[in-house]
Length: 215
Image (cartoon, rainbow, N blue to C red; front, top):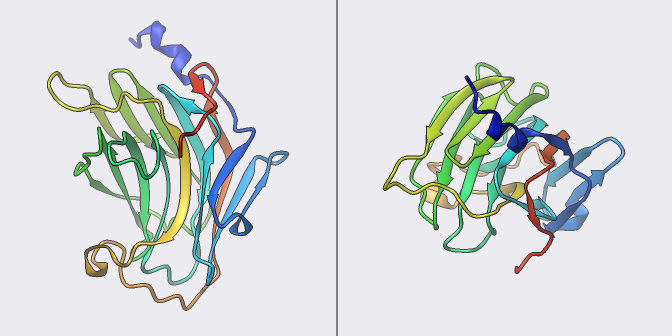
C-alpha cells in the first residue's frame, strides 16, 4: 500500500513560465496551449528550463521527437540542480539521435553519473506524442513512459541519491563530439531543421523551493 504521506509530492500543475538558456529564437513557448517547441538548425539548438527549482515531485510531458535523420543529436527532458555545475544532481530521459526506438535513463549525484540504462520504446519517438514522466521522492525515482514504469531506483544507504532541489530542463543539441560519435551517432543534418515538440507539461504543485538561478 502506498504511503499516504508521499501523495503531496505528486500533485501537478501546468508549467506557467520558462527561462530559455540559449538561442531564444529557436524556442517558442505558448502558455495558453501549454506547449513548447525547440528547433535545431544552423543556429544550433536551444534549452529551456523551469523558472523554479523543486525538491521532489512528478514531472511529465507529452513529447514528439524530431523527424528525419537525427543522427548526432540529443533531445531530452531532465531534472538538474543547475546545468553547468560540476557537482549537480540530475535525473534524465535522453533520446539518442542515431536510434529513435530507444531512450536512455540516467541519474547523477554531486556530479557523478554512470548509471545509464537503455530502454526499447516499442515505437519510433518521432511518430507521435508519447508521455514521459519522472517521479522523484525522497526514497525512490521512477521513469514512466505512457503510464508504464520502465525503471525504478530506490535510495540505498551508503549510495548516492539525488537530494538537491532541481529545475526541469529540456534541450536539443549536437552530441556527436562525445565518444567519437559513438553515443548519438555522427551529425548528418540532412533533414534540418529538426523540431522537438513538448505539450501538456506538468510540474509539482507543493514542492517549489525558490525562483532564483545562480547561473
